[in-house]
Image (cartoon, rainbow, N blue to C red; front, side):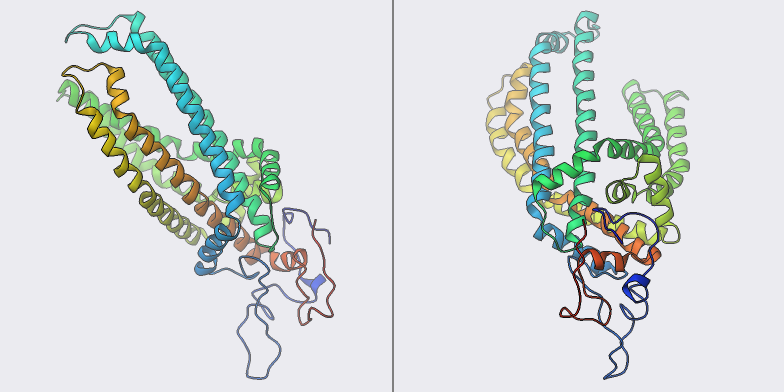
Length: 389
């Protein structure tokens, strides 16, 4: 049987290796009586055993992958998130320099005086362009990260080495499909998120205008109620589709096919996938908080010194310059946290994909053959390596 880089898709039979699926019978089953030679532990050519994975295997495999393959993982994060941050900083500097005079006019207006449209339109245009650029950069960077992590796992599971250049080529080849997949997954949670945003803006309007009537407060109540009603459905769909990015890379699936593939793999194990995914996200979030904290603290010291020299009525430029030290420190802290902790949930999700295929499609023998693991009951001396392509 030929092996491709992503191990293909669909169910496999273990007959070609002369045994039953891993996790049953010989591999992964309970050991027999002393002296009985019918059981051997599941092979582990890479970061995980090629058998149904427990929670410790999933988390340990993710940490091991980050330790062994930190160069391509963190390298991709540095290129993507660092490059995106530099582009955004340059865009904000250019936008601010273009509309600085309009902003100062608006800020300097007395109370109860409406700003002129000649000042408001350039500000809104600049904000819209920067916001749109930020959305595009986030989508592209996220798509490439979603593609690069499974690309690393392709070799990590088999115990192979992988270079940054190889990961970049694989990620770039799947970028278009991954962008579509990430966009479709985002649409799943878009409705409750938008409803929450509507409720928030309605609350702000009610607080600013001191509206105690039925206007903004009614909109806020409806937004919260509808968000609560749609959130369970969005969560259910998001978990069903959570393995779609791995299917895009491992199997070369297109967006809609990847969503269907993920739904098929998650079927019957929804709660376990939800719990493990949330646990991985919580671990990554805690790690990101710890990483960002010293940057935020260090950024406060130059800000305290520079803000002490501000006039009683400082200009927007002076305020931004005074806050620049803190803003730069926070941005660097967020970037470092994203690079270090960001791959972890994606690794766990990718390993969940592998686990579901091992459990439901007997993928273990396929991976063992691709990794040149000896056949069941054999030994390195009498086994012929099978090199996967």
